[in-house]
Image 1 (cartoon, helix red, strand yellow):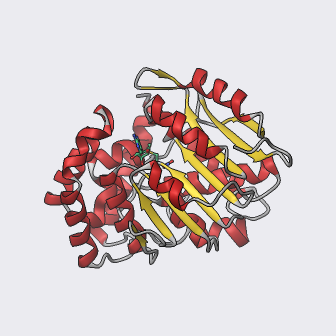
Image 2: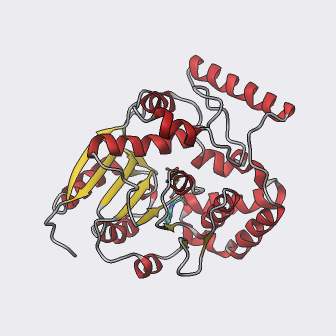
Length: 317
Ligand SMILES: C[S@@+](CC[C@H](N)C(=O)[O-])C[C@H]1O[C@@H](n2cnc3c(N)ncnc32)[C@H](O)[C@@H]1O
């Protein structure tokens, strides 16, 4: 860790401590029944951790332990979540924040979204203490898509997200006015956290078919509720497809082919998988059906976006 980064972490920690001690935290109060439901869901899914793979299996196991011993109102401070899903201030967030700040839609779109209260006690976002680093990143994905592709990624009737973390992108697009169907595919214990987080923001997500925000653990369930190939079907996977086993990626690829707009972000390497090579070859295959835009992510060395807009006359699966 460089001296600069150590200073940034120190300043963040001081701000977080002051906020905690002085009650300056901007969190939405959490209904105790939601915390009970989270614990019940996590216990119900406890046996599933083994099939989540080594890396995510361990995260899911320690998530249950955190929920049994800690307060879900501070879930972003829980080590398994903080380590995998909660970014801190760094070059990337600063670049993303600057891009939003200099956008023509700062006042009417991004500022209101960024300044909404949230839950989970995220660490301080140094460029703007009224928001958090993940919301900045998610807003910047939408901004980047619009800039490169000329259309809104979330202007859709249905969105499918593969690997949604605790549900922050789902919350963001709902706060931007999305009212269609949102389908999330993720590991069972992580969907429990999504259900909790989204409900605390007034968005009801559930496992039962027919819900406007539907949580799925199996791709068959996603396929059953996903509309047939459609231009108004958008898909997203940010730092998630790039963390999944290769066999699962192949099945998801078939589903991506059915979508009108795709938004992917990935790191060059994950747990020994050469993602740069994998995404190059994915890009070649998707280019048959999509106009693709691949771009380096500003401030995030080795990380890239792959955005796609379905061609007007694509070969449909
Ligand atoms: C690093 S998080 C990214 C979360 C979010 N997309 C974001 O950008 O903040 C990776 C996500 O992929 C999910 N994931 C990892 N492996 C998976 C698998 N085998 N099946 C389903 N979801 C998986 C994780 O549970 C988590 O939600």
